Image (cartoon, rainbow, N blue to C red; front, side, top):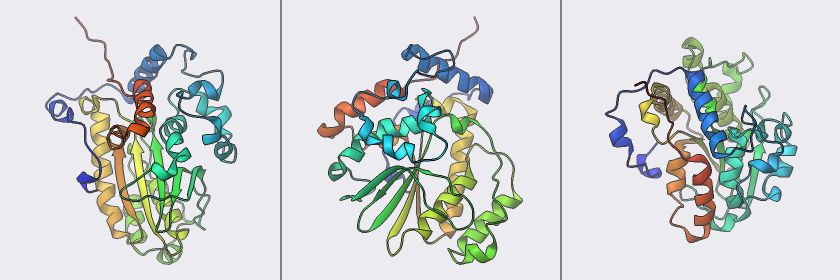
Length: 292
């Protein structure tokens, strides 16, 4: 990714010189949920709210997302979406107002969007595809967003089924043969879900027609992310994937944190109040208890 695409937070420099914490993945997730509950005491001890509407910031309306999520997989709206740590709710709370005001939304130089959708299904023709968390389309591009919250704290193997054969992949883009072969041979657990990103890339290419395609991986981190080994490792894996996906000619891949993406719009008066609400709910440092 071109680093000029997104504005990076200036406090990262100081964090680079701190010794990263070796706290376990599960404990970090628990501490993040605990802080979310502290800031939003309506949730139960597991971080779940009574109704999905309780998880919305006040600039988001049901009309922004409800139909899209009800048509998605897994009945997420009446389950996972009710968790304070839901990546789907995170995405809706950020993109919902933009979806309602597409004429004012510019992404990586693209504007004049005519279509937008949460939980967009793009068939790969090889297996059941994962849903894109958010989707945009204009006259020139289709753009898919994959949103992550606490998922980046869970390691997983890059499982890519045999349905993704070299023969079928070559009909999409031969670059996929090389990248999938690499992750099949090097299938150790990682914080980055490379298999999902590959499937999203295939779906976007197969459904773009004569347009161009972009996949944007947008993920949450605490403000002091560089103090934790897990987030540093996630960035390393992300940079490696970014290099490998360059062998695929049919798609542009970009990655950004929510904070970096947020910084692109904070000076826009129209979105400023919305973004302040989003910041108040989601941007905080991860606090660890210190021993005396």
